[in-house]
Figure 1 (cartoon, rainbow, N blue to C red):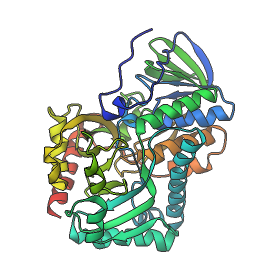
Figure 2: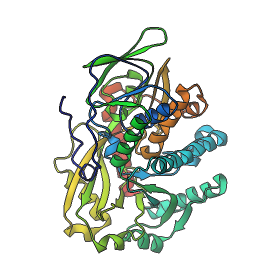
Figure 3: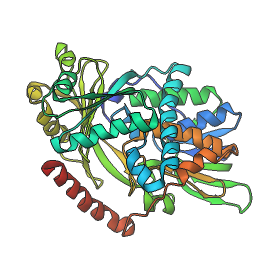
Figure 4: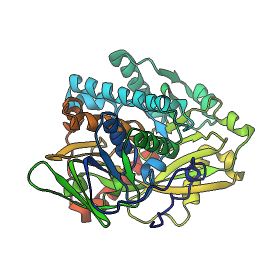
Length: 429
């Protein structure tokens, strides 16, 4: 069997549960649904369809959870990527409420999958939103108040400067709010657990199998071509997110890969409980967000900083560490045991891209840093649509998705200019 590329070196990979190497596709195959990509979206799609009795083949260019699903910050947020007042201004209150209801179900879906399939992924409740500019505190609290008053949300409590300092062990933030029903997990172990559950339900997963083309016979069958064989399927789901590699031009025009970075310190011992006593996750108000949490073995897992090409910083640990030390200068003496990067995908409006691209070909991607809940839930909605009920999938698919200006060649410099402006805004207020 061809030797598969290992997962990227990270704390997640170092603490991943043992997983089998799944053989690549060898020859031609036929199924009801071919899923391209074995991350949260692809695995959830396969699981939900296999439970309905569909014959599903998942193909993955590398390993299960090799991409963003196995490298991200592991934070499960409430709501959509954009706040509800913004969604109301874009779509009106009725659609905004529908989008919030789906996002809340997404959160429940992740928790239900963990419980139903006994997925050991270090789940913990609680996430704190920390405001880094005093002038922004009122707006942040108003956002939480809006969820409480207009959406009946019961998970939010406010934190003043003293309260947030006690909650996260630093005095650099001006306040914020605690979200009791959000939380965090070990994303790679969650992905591996989804893969096991999908296989138990009857799905087949082929690692080391990259899709190179998708074609249609003009009737009811699609053909997915790989280097080692073809798959004939009634339906195809493209769930490659930031690792699309030009497979579909419509997705490629609207979903752009960017790089984000995370570090893991050495175990902090008693210091960990002094920093974040209730072991909640934290995300701040910067546009290029800083996010962190304490791992199950007492390390600081801290994410911050992005790049917009294919090259990572020469010193990833140093690149992220400087962000961490702005918030926790007392960690200057702490050793960094792991540092890694991963590719996520963003859209122009930072809302996910759900589409029926053409008959029998579906996609969901572009989660813009909000993928633990929405990417997993996307699999449920994709399965519903393939089974014939498109109503909830269509709510997400109705979100407009502009193409990045300039196509593949110019979208990267355009985004760099925009992100430079947002970074300047973060610094200056």
